[in-house]
Image (cartoon, rainbow, N blue to C red):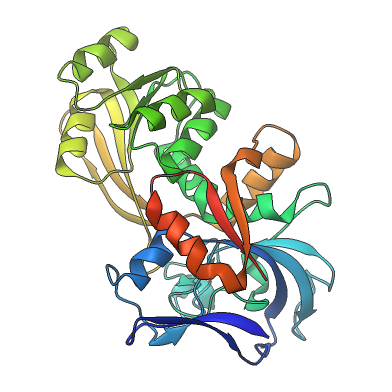
Length: 342
């Protein structure tokens, strides 16, 4: 099969012919339909994040069709349309030894980090890392759900967001913009988007934010107090990760407010830390998502609650991966996904 291979030592990327992966008894072979180019893929290729494997196939936001199943797999058959979770169970933690599956595993193995990813014609993963995709849903849309939408949805779950709660979103790039959409579906109000870029603020308003502010404005705190009628934010999501945004978000939390710091998951952890102050306000570190989040997003999309049709900007063949990477580097904060298609 054809696969994009990255040599992390030499910094070399190439399209190569490699063997189709062999299956273990509990695994599934998926013929890839589409896979996104994520900012974390770019970070590894540019050397900002250390790769665990010297040579590997990148890509972890994939959808496709089941091509073959291992001898012990009963939940999938060839021809099933699926979206692939970025993490699979480690098989070694106490939860895995008890047979509780990837939704409980405490040490997930991540695609393109611990094993080969999906910039290829085929990929292999565990049977528990797949979610069924209905026939009416384009597989390209399903690929967007895996990562670009599921990570912010996981953050909403971590925050235990409830209807009518006031939400602030710092950084409305790819993840933040989708969180705005999801927060509106969850009934949050008001939803306040904060980003220095005018085009990002405009996009957030188009996707469901009630108000969009420039965080550099010195009156942000007073604006948020006015918009929330003095109660402050119930939940603040920080996708920027700077000390300045953390302090600004924490300062406008209301009573028992929660601040969720959303970060990439380089090693498989999902929630890194949880701390509660004397004032009842909570800071939570969140990374990644679970298979259950991906299942919920497929249903929301199938039932017409969530629309990701405008989240795909380009679909390119594997051979044009360098062009796709250039598009992502050009504007990392763009919520539109560049997909590769074998």
